Structure formats: C-alpha cells, structure tokens
Amino acid sequence: MGEAQVTPTPAPTPTPVSNQRTHTVVRGDTLSHIARANNTTVANLRRLNNLSSDVIRIGQRLVVGEARVTPAPAPTPVSNQRTHTVVRGDTLSHIAQRNNVTVRQLMTINNLSNDVIFVNQTLRLR
Image 1 (cartoon, rainbow, N blue to C red):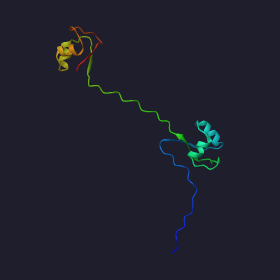
Image 2 (image 1 turned 90 degrees about the vertical axis):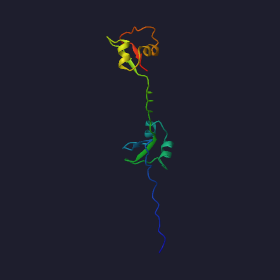
Image 3 (image 1 turned 90 degrees about the horizontal axis):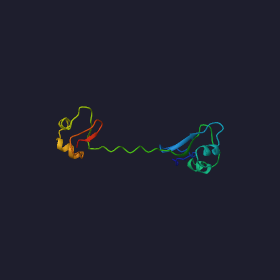
Image 4 (image 1 turned 120 degrees about the vertical axis):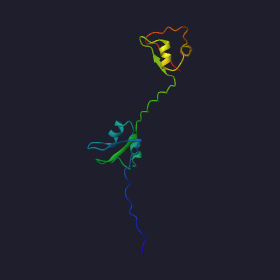
C-alpha cells in the first residue's frame, strides 16, 4: 500500500464574507476599469483576490473592497417622564385625577405658580 497522492489545485477565487463588496466580471471588464469604478487600485484587486496576473474571466467574482455599512441610528432614549398635552376643557384637577397625582404635585413638577393652564401646553406628569 502506497501513500495517497495529493494533486495540487489552483487557488480558488476568495469566497466573499458579508463585510466585502464583490463584482462579477462581464464581457469587456478589465481590472483597471473595475478598480476605477470601485475607488481602488489594480494592485489592491490583485491582492484581495490572490491574482498573479491581470487576467480575469467572465463570470469570475472579484472582491472589490469592504462593504459600505451605514450605522444604524442611535435608539431614542426611553424617558420615564410621562406628559400630557392640554386640550380645551382640561383643568389641573381633572388631569391630576386621571393620572393619580395631586394638583400640588403637577404644579411643582411643572413649576407652575398658579392653576392656569393653556391649550397645547405640555405638562409633565411624573
């Protein structure tokens, strides 16, 4: 029984990972055109794709750079403060009753010197 022989295979085209942008070669493409279109260099394309020459084939998938990721917006902080926007007919007494607070608490929380409130005024409840 002899030893198993291993036949060398050509280096595969790199399998892109999720953080890489790729380009599939079409007729007429050159490394120079692909590099220019992706704001990179031929040397960088050759390095990213383990190419030993500038020869590329139609259908070949080339890594052209890192994916452009737009960061998600920061979440809006959740506030423990509840508010009430005054509507016509509201009184501090009714607002206080509906929200299980006293009129005095509403006045203190909102820096009110009297019980006069106005339509569209926003009052903090806690």
